[in-house]
Length: 584
Image (tube, rainbow, N blue to C red):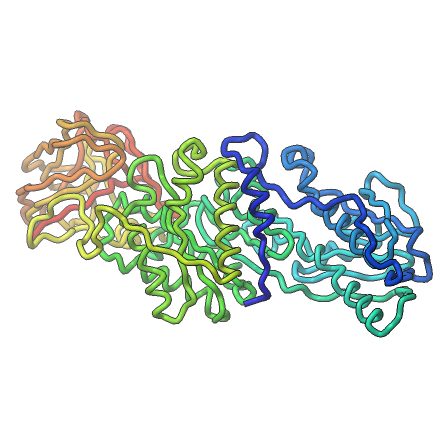
């Protein structure tokens, strides 16, 4: 692991400023005093010049903040990191030389010959900084100017074109100059001139953190995903020594068998490309696995666990030292489907499972943290945080990283009530000997290839039936369907039919299914059925008079989406989502 950095004082200052629901961004940085400190030993001061020019004639000129006017107003001047670096540089120079240099922002100061430039200023001498790799520093005497900077735009590392400004390379760019001064002082030299064209540029060992996840990582519902997502706020908290990379992708799942799997996305490609540079990988995937689980049962929990193995293997393939942090689903204030207890119970298994496989894995209880420190008021849609919520999440993660770097982090796996993973998930009391006659693998049942769908047809309205006759010769014992909203006593119709594409030619028998309880955005199960489907017959679902509104699934190339609709107006690109259990 790279050298240890702590940010406890910064975090203490930061945490006192967080006010959930505040209209201003709560993130703060430690201010640098503008008053020159007292010189302890004047005799030890250096006589320093640059390219033959006396230091007293120089001005420190720092780059304008990359944040726009709206953000500058929101962040306040404490977010002007180039200014903070310039102030700290002025303090170092004063401590070494006794010269207290003026500090100016580049667009508010007419160019002069004697300048120490900080960051990508508007001076021509700063132009090379714009092309720098994020891990490179730039410290060079160009003409009469000393240019201090470093790579700052991490866009090429994110893969989702989310700009993340990193100031750590610029912050450490002067270190090489400092080292040169120390070497000369150690040799007894007190009068020094930094010659023209001297190049102190080098690489910097940033603590690199990859944030892997879905929309809650990418920053959905924040004012600006580039600056208000939790990774962006985390970057500002840990700005001096860290590079935070946002690899979130909205709607993605951990499970590889689902249409919206994270593996295979652009972010996943970038993740693998740069994984060797990562010190930490914060993995928070599972909220969407819970959501998609509305349309079919997790007949094998191993699908989630194996998919997690695959993702972590991609991260660690060229990085044995990587610290993987499994973060469970944040709190969800809607129905039980997103961040479901079952998925969180599976997430509990991952640290030990990965550790046994030789991975350096740990766990962070994001579910408990968001419940305790973020709260319902900061989840506008009950699922995604607002700016204040994301900022508070970043506080928790910064504390996590600080503890990990200090070697003091420990965790206790949370209990998930009402979930026993040894019991298969089910929405009804499936009759003994019955099996799900519909495939558990949607990629087979609802094919994505060529944008095609499973063949369901309107039977001259109101019924829909399926051109995949898996029900022929079966006895149906249980039917489960995801529904938008149902009250006790609502009814739904299932018929045993023959058809000749695309119309029903015979209806053998119709069954009315009645909801025995209220159900909101979840699974509705009908148990104890005895629906005989003779050879050559199939099932038709739904009637215009039904009061139960099921969810339908559509399968665009980006994945599966579910929505409720009136039974009379089914989108031809949609299919009914069911689990049908029976025996043959």
